[in-house]
Length: 314
Image 1 (cartoon, rainbow, N blue to C red):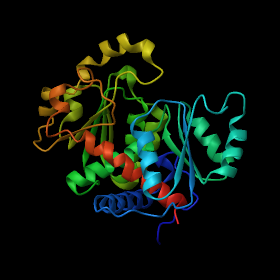
Image 2 (cartoon, one colour; image 1 turned 135 degrees about the vertical axis):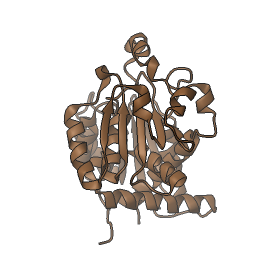
Image 3 (cartoon, helix red, strand yellow; image 1 turned 135 degrees about the horizontal axis):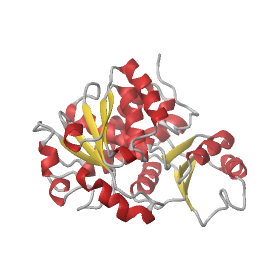
Image 4 (cartoon, helix red, strand yellow; image 1 turned 90 degrees about the horizontal axis):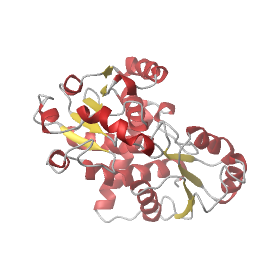
């Protein structure tokens, strides 16, 4: 049956079937090709989109803004000091007000429960631009980048190294389990992911034919990897832990030695950005031909556009 995502919120890839995720990726590729060809869209003409940001942003904010304008919508940025979200006003009250005025709402902030509450009460689609535990729009961009480089997702070997319980590790594990990507988290044991989430992902992986591994040895974690992925060692809101986190994660830096440990010549490097070069990745790897980080960054716009077109578009 044709995929229909009209009216759906986009909070986590756990809520979507492999067929629905594949549809979003196909739509993303189509919208990217049209953008490259100079073809402007009108799928969001007359729509108004609220962009709620508790956390600072470069790629997410710019991607949503440009994607809205490309397809004829009006984006309205609402920063943490612009409205009373979760402070003077209950989340559900803000959600009901915004839902009366906007056709869709993006939220980027701390608590997953907040984006879920917004979706519960808004009456319009709500899209997760990042929370402390998930980052689904980023994973769509990552997967589009993988498809562009390898022509497929199923059967690829993707390794994430670093903080194994942060939002990117979680989101990549969910997406990989759904789409048949063999996924390894390489991390110190102190930063292993939530066991309950691992079990949920392994259940999904059984259906897709993927394998989920959690490894505490840097070199073993990347063996056979088609792509090596990392993220900052200190996430927003964790700055007080910087010194201890750097000591713990220094052996997990993505450098030339670690990339050679994959045993593959075609291994690519991925990062959601911003990157702290010299910490989680060396300048040499970041600036190498294997680095596809700016393809990923561009693909945020195309995949976010696809999510909005699929859920509120004409």
